[in-house]
Structure formats: structure tokens, C-alpha cells
Image (cartoon, rainbow, N blue to C red):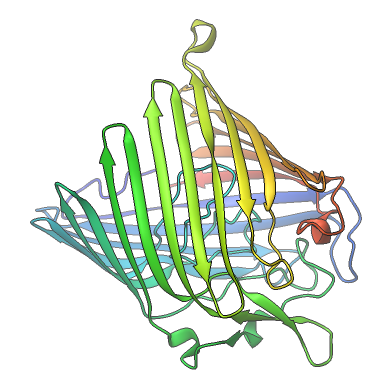
Length: 384
């Protein structure tokens, strides 16, 4: 794939085309859901430009997917469409962009700027493009970023025929808002980040529309309506590096009219480098997750869970890597398993494998509604 902003003063065009197939080996739980194989194809074009003095940048990243089974998963989005400019100790980004915050593996708790593209995957790592004005300043004492977010992106949900939904489908286009400005409410975020020796720290304050909806039953009782409340949220992320150890912590507190709660995920990753005199590295991960939100208002996993995983990176020319992880609910013993593997093929192709399973899921667990949605996935991509 062509490197980002590789030729100053010139436009760089790149992108990818992917063919994907998911296979669900358990019967669907709800009427209308598809069984068996779910093929789809996606296209992600990218166009970037950088001025000769490298102060000014323009970026466009589009995304479109066609899914054979779930019409709601057939969708498109502008992931990036922004102009960025840097001068002295300042930087500004105006347009649609994606911003990632977080350090842990099992849950990205502090990542709040972009809305989740929920039909792409249930790991919440795929995000919709967010309109923003972002102003940053980098000083000796740290980096401060101000985010002005003038338009709210509604979450995407599986359709009637899609997997990964509850007994009643969600009608995203009937969303309700606490704010009278609805999607035009201007959200604000302020973040400070810096490092002190081997310790990296990030703290932020967010004021605006909650990215996680609660749900109300429709008048006919046939579907769910997402309701987006206003919230204040404060976040903290820490990462401490000592030799082969990475100690990580993410924590938030959130205040809404319906609920005030805190949540955290913390643990470590220890890496064995060049195992057996090879170029391969092997990482061991252990994280604890806690979330004390009122489950009668917003159902969420990870109230009292442990995640254990291992990451194998071969460091070969094909960038081969494998991540295997499992999570246990310490209260109800619900169990989840995840495998992700990827490898480049030649200069322009890649192959990704993924598998997720759920077992012994308790009826009061957030994953109970999708307990039969175990699946395996193969994705073949061409980069140009």
C-alpha cells in the first residue's frame, strides 16, 4: 500500500478492495435472521496531498460495503475528509476525521470522539467519520487538544436479517435525543497528554451527546428506538513501560440524568522477544475489567471480567501476526473466545482470519442476546 503523504506537493491515490465471508454455524435465534454464510465486499478509496513545505495536508478516505444478508450492513461512509495545517507549535484539523484514544487490548473505554460503526464488527474498533474542528498545541509541558464537534453521528445497528442483534431490531432512523438540537448539538472535548520518563498519560473532559444509546420500546412493541442523552465524561489513560512490561490503564467517569457511573480496564502485556532465537515475539496479556453502570438503564458487558490473551508476531516480510484471547465474567461465568490472524501475500494482497465464540452465557449477561452468533470469518484484500 502506498505510504501516507509520501510525495510532497503531489496527490497520492491508494486504497483497497476486500472480499469477506462470515459463517455462522449455529441456528439464528430470532425470526428473519440469516443462517450459514454471509458474504460481502468492501471498497476503501484513499486520496492524500501534502504541500511542499509539509505544513498543509488534505486527506480523503471513503468506505462502502455491500452485504448479501443484512441490508443495514450494506452502507457507505466518509471516514476522512479534512484539511490540516501546522504552524510553529500549533496544529489545526478541519473536516471529517477519526481520532483514537486508548492503550488496552480488551476494551477501548476512553475512545469517545468517533461513533462506532456497529454493523462492521462487534469489537467496536470500526468508527464512523466525525465532523470536527481540532486545535492542538505541543509544548515542553505536554500537548493540549481542543475538539469542537458540530454534528453527531448515529450508531449503526444490524437489520432484521442480520446477526448480532437482540429479539427486537433497532430502528436507527427513529432515534430520539435529550437535546433539542438533536444531531446538531455541538459537543466539546479537551485533552491533555504527555510523558514523564517511561510513563505516558492522557486525561480528557468531554461534554456532549452520549455515543452509547439507551433504548425505548416502540409504541407497537415491535422494535427498539435508540435514545441519545447528554453526558459529561472524564477519562484517564496510563501506560508505563519497564523492560518487556507494558502496564496499562483506562478509566472513565460518566454523568447523565439517568445514571452516574465509573468503569475501568487495566492490566499488562509482557513480551518475550526473539523466542527460540527467531525473529518472532510472543506477548502475554492479562487485563481486569469493571463497570458499575445501572444495567436496568444501559446493558453493557464487562462489569467484573478478566481477559487473558497472547499475541504472536513473526516479524517476517509478510507481517504475520496472531492474537488469541478469552474473557470470563467472574460473576456469572459467561465465556467469550476471540482469534485474529493476518498475513500479507506478496506486495499487494493480505489474508485475515477471525473467529469469535460465546459459551455458558448467563441470561443476565449482555452477550445473552447474541449467544448463538458464533462465527468464523475470512477476508481477502487487494491493496493498490
